[in-house]
Each structure stands twice: as C-alpha cells, then as structure tokens.
Amino acid sequence: MNMNKLKMSAIAVGVAVASPLSYADIELGKGLTVSGFVDMSFVHQETDDNGSTKVFAVDQVETSFMYAGSSGVSAQVDIEYGESGDDNGSDETFIEQAFITKQVTDDFSIKAGRFLSYSGWETEEPTGLFQYSGTGYAPIFYGFYQQGVSAYYDAGMVDLAISVVNDVFANPVENDTTQLGTEMMVAITPIENLTAKLFYMTEGEKDAVNAWVSYGINGFTLAAEYNTAEDTAFAGSDASGYLLMGNYTVGKFGITARYHQYDVEDAAGATVTDMTGLSIAPSYSIGDNLLLVAEFRMDTDDVSDEDTDTIALEALFTF
Image 1: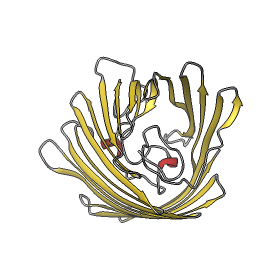
Image 2: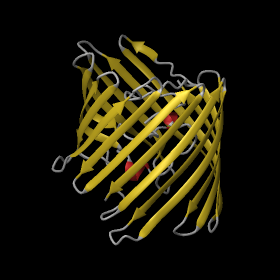
Image 3: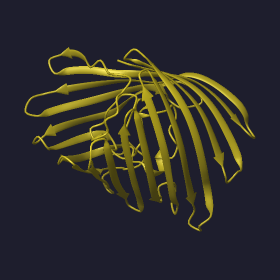
Image 4: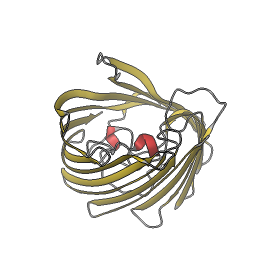
C-alpha cells in the first residue's frame, strides 16, 4: 500500500513521494497524539442501462489516537464515522483499528490487535490514493482489517513481515481461531526511490498473491501491480488482475492516470467478471491540510457489455 495524499504506512519503505498534505499530530498529553481526516465528495455516474445518479456525501471521518508509552510499547486506536450502508442511510461509528506494538529492537517489532493488512498498492483509506476511487478489486486480491498478531523486521534494503490472523480477507471482527490465516511480505528497496513488494496470503482454500513495484523521480511516481487469487471471490473462483499508474506532482498541482483490469472465472472456467477501467484525476492542494481532487473514470464490463462513466469531485481535509 502506498500513498500520495498523506498517510505513510509502516511498510512504505523507499518510496520518496512528497505529500501535498500533512497531519497535525495534535498533542493531547504526554505521549498521546491525535490526527485524522474528513472526506467528502460529489459523484455523478452514468451507466448504459441504469441511467444516471448524482450523490453528495460526507464519505468518511476518521480520528486516530496514538500513544507512545515506555519500554518501546505503543498503541493506536482509529475510530471511523461513516455511512452504515443500510437502506436508511444512517451513520455508523466503529473501531477500525486497535492494536498494541512492542518495539523489541531497532529493527524488529511485534503488534497485536486489529490492524489493516500490509498488502496492496492502493490503501483502504482515501488518504492513501493518488486519485478519488480505488480500482474495486481490493476485496478479491488484498487482505483487509485483520485480528491477530504481526511481526515486522526492517533489515534495510529488505523488509520482512508475517501476520497470523483470524480472517485474512473479509471479516475484521472475526474471533474464531479454528481456521487461522497467514499473510507474508517481502519488500526490497535496491536503489533510492525504487520499491518492490511481494505478498502471499492464505486461509483454508483461499490463496492470493499481490505484487507491486513503484519508482519516483523528479515529481513523477510510476507504479505497476499484479494480482492472482483462488477462492477469494467465491468458492471455486480463479481471479487475476493488474494496474498501471502514473502521477506527476509539481507544487500544488498533480495529475494521475491509472488503468486497471481484472477477471474472475468460476470452477468450470467460465468468465463471470471481466472489468477494465481508466481514470484521469487532477488535484490541487490548498495549504497543508486540504486537497481537492477531480476524477473522470470510464469502466467497461465485458461480460454484460455495459459501460459506466463517472465524474467525481472530492475534498479531503486532514488534521
């Protein structure tokens, strides 16, 4: 997972991308800080068979509380406020992440609790995207919020991580440990600004491989990702997908182009999903904490032969 808007993850090694926004990291007391974001958007979507829709909404509000204790022990709790997704359009508040980390040595750490998977070029949060939208294939190829234990080793040019969790792909509140899942990562930074990561995730009959590489130079960030998975879309499924992305940022202005494709086959080998998408997204930062993003996206469903065009305007404020 990587980002241009702001939030650097713990595994974003070697990707020297200047963020147009910043967190305030407001200090509440000794060792206790808070940060977060407010994300809102207007989206106009037109589909061949279903006409058009227009939606304006506060998509997500999140607050992160971080506490740095003694003896290398720290904790983080992320609280998300957003739409529940039910037919009533009601709001829902829940604990998105809550984990404790022990820094055993300068290079080795262990965390336990509920945390987001390391996998995937595109992050789950809006602060981790170069454009407004994600590809849409993350539930098939990426891990999700997970409950369990994770170890991370930073060896300089090579980083290693392994997580043992209750559910790798879908259920962040799963507490049944009868069938555990595993996520493994190898990350390398052979030269400055070049990063490559490989993930293998498995749980029961489900398996997925996620690999991506990125390179940043002179305001440009280029990235490519490839994915393959079995049984993650549904039982007996076989899926593959990829993306290509380029971003150029100069001063307050940025522009991103992304192309992605993914397909899913059933147990009989019939293609049930075949999606392609192209996005163009200019952006403009106002100060250090407000980013405006516009996106024009064209999606094609080759199974149903249906095209969807989307125009989105986003305002993302961080604190």
